[in-house]
Image (cartoon, rainbow, N blue to C red; front, top):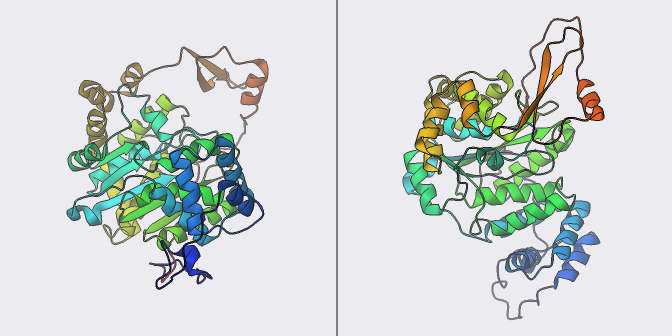
Length: 435
């Protein structure tokens, strides 16, 4: 069903999948890539056929790298309207294999996505927590580092043996036995987005609203979801610096999702500071495990429970958000989320003994089991000399300017310590009549 505010198409030919019903004319010749790039560069509107042609060229290799970069930049500068963004999302989703699940799972299939932020390890905790709450956290098709943020896959691959590429058959077994899995994009799943994702990182088009929207939702369209929550970050450590910019993306995600038949909610969360206390792949795995111990940083636990609670409510598995939040919190406190995480690790390639030791060990024991940097350098607070920051590094020691920059981030005050506010700022829901 079309999203609210969608205008009727002015040309049936532009928006149909084939030739208009009853037409005796031959379909128009597809435009060549230079023509498509020129059209979008000059502010024109791309039809569904135009967009399908571009995506097809990306996948079959006929589009040169320079042409892909030029189109991405044209989209970044000129934007896309709602229908164009929906068409791009659908074309990316159709570029590869579609995932199918047993009919009995229909109301259990949920997923979460984050636009990424420094220290964001929510997915590592939320996927097993939702599985413990009775959901099928369908293959969370996650990404790698984009821009200045680390990716979920990079973090998981810091665990020796963890394998992110799983066949659809393996994914189904994981969902049957564990209830969740976190995987990467294979050549069969949304291959066009994988190519564009890498190109965006090197062409300064990471922050393009339609490109972000299509990239996120295309991976969710192929998953056959019943509900999705997207964590849209804003602030100094996120792609979008202001809440207003994040609101635009959140609304686009919800509206495009509705137009494609997805039930989507978007949470706006502040990322003026790193999430939690640790930044870095292995360190974030350790912190995620702390959260699954029922402990860990309060801001991480707050975001995990709020996002999970929203998703349970959105999918009809909780009567209210508060009930959903309580169920997710219980999964963290009673070790059921951690148990699911252990099973997921073992079934995605980690030695079962290592998975068990990681999930049952103390923080000190876990640190011995995971890869570590060669050196650690502690920075001391100038007032009493106690360490306030520990930097893990394989590179040479921190330089003088680097030390000065880090020490400049420390502010000493006579005021009493304060509790950081919840990063959860706003929830964007589908408009009435859009689904």
